[in-house]
Image 1 (tube, rainbow, N blue to C red):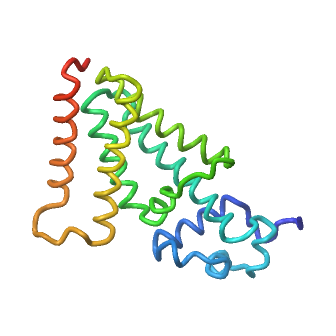
Image 2 (image 1 turned 90 degrees about the vertical axis):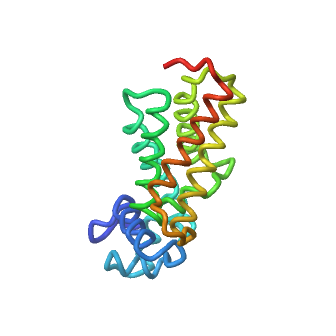
Length: 194
């Protein structure tokens, strides 16, 4: 590989690509649009990445790392219902603030992609640790984590696509959804530790 020019590195490429997808959507990410954003010629990107799919992979890892970071901060020092409420708020803030980056985090990691597998696993393990306060067995914890992810993603995806047209406050609907999820946990696992 040739020496990098213009101070371009992977970090700058990922940040520029993040700006593109957050502003214009994932479909607008091309090597040409990325090169324009970085004020370089498209072939210069090949000194750092192997094409747009490589950039998407890097974005997915970066997005997962950012999501993990915001969730970690949200649950720090909290447990049980409070931790789940704060985790959900952090998740929605991330999806609202970084719509393109959020979308690309949903890309399923390839089995051979150890880095993406690692970050995805860390997020799942964090959610399962939060759910440990409800004293459920490990299989139920996975079911509960999947249920929570499905709720959060479904709401975020519908919001991003303008799927909520009724004149009812979205934040109230979100709170109702989380309250209902928590009520379900309490009903199913009544011996929760606080």
